[in-house]
Image (cartoon, rainbow, N blue to C red; front, top):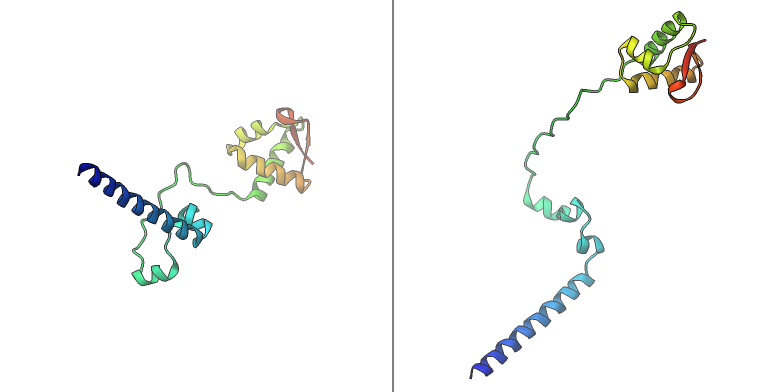
Length: 137
């Protein structure tokens, strides 16, 4: 009797497993790849009709604060003029590090201003990398 019970339970479990497998295969065949494998947040988001049926969205949490110093882009043309005036007082030229320390400006800002000064031909340069010296025209 115990064997009959086990075999019937095994039979029922096998049928349920086969039915589940068939339903999963049919579901995968009828679904898009994004729905099956997911594509980030878009896959987890319900369809627009389902979202509309839920009602208005709850207000979102405020964005997290960014770390570091706030970025404010200074006026490059004014800085180019300051650099040109500084280089006019130094006929032997200055390296970018020297310009930066004299004017007390951060590296990306000086780099941007030097590039703009070279493009507008307000400045010239000789050398490469750290050996580059800048001159006023």
